Length: 158
Image: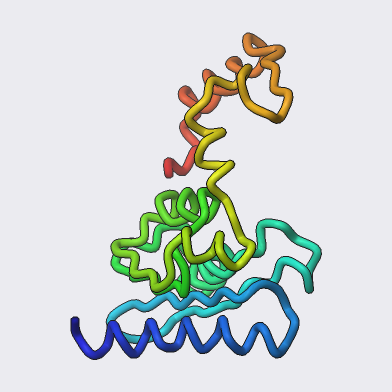
């Protein structure tokens, strides 16, 4: 393992540890690197911001996109103190990060009280079989919007 990977991962772990003392959110930290330079870092800010999406990874992605003025983080690497939850993993893919390194696993997180296996299990089920009551309505009306998007000459594909 290259020393720089270890250094950037150690920074993510340090952010997670600092977050415990600062009481900003859960014990998670994330660092985004481009060309061996940290361009964004964040801690979990869920409880301090009352934002359930303010996980360390998502918050770092937001900061990196703002700094680089793009929604495409190709060429960037994410170092995170723990294996990303399904939401964060989705954000990693949507932002097109080129590589992901994590330290603790989701099993380790579950042992500390952060169990997201139920979400992984829910995603594998058809919508009607999930714990959250889910029902599709007005699909035809909504699909008109997709037709408008597909035909628009003013769109920015992503």
